[in-house]
Amino acid sequence: MLGGIDAMKKATCHGAVAALAAGLFCAAPAGRARAQERPEGVRIERLMYRGTGCRQGTADAQIVGGGTAFIIVFTEFNAQAGPSASPSEGRSRCNVSVHLRYPEGWSFTAASVVYRGNAILGPRVSARMGARYNFPGTPSSSAEVELTGFATEDFELLRQFDTARWSPCARRGALPVNVLATVEVSNRQDRSSSGLITVEQHDGTFDLQLNLRWRRC
Image 1 (cartoon, rainbow, N blue to C red):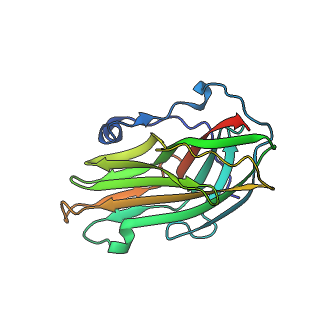
Image 2 (cartoon, rainbow, N blue to C red):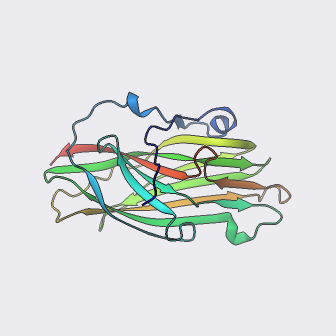
């Protein structure tokens, strides 16, 4: 397990990235979250992942906020475009399965996702980050962030999922939550320009934080 996950990261949605991500929200500090009814003892029992952007040993997950969220942390997850970059470097993806264990009689949905990373985008370069989740045998829900233009800074951006998908009440053991994380950078509008989405300069990670809502079955 990777150490040093900071569950109380300060929001950095400002400057160029805030302007490029019009219509999105800055992530509020964890201490401002409204209290909600939730079960005790929510924990991650197992984590599995694979993909072009997450070789083994580069991802971790942790419950935060007393079970109101979980964070998937990547120490390597990036995409880049530019004159010296190959087409395959323009997109990365990772399929993550987070097995959550929690008391019976509860159901949850992922209401929103917070993206944390670093954007270095030249003029006329665009970047897209996506998150999609589902439970076994159920449709998926997705959320996407798109940045276009010039940026050179860490970011922390909040996006609502398009549909509320609630976990089944009837289950045995830990419930797998399947998450697909993607990042893509394109310089189609100006092949001479370069761009990169990568880990934060602040702590060297790229994070997805899924914020959960709970209800009794």
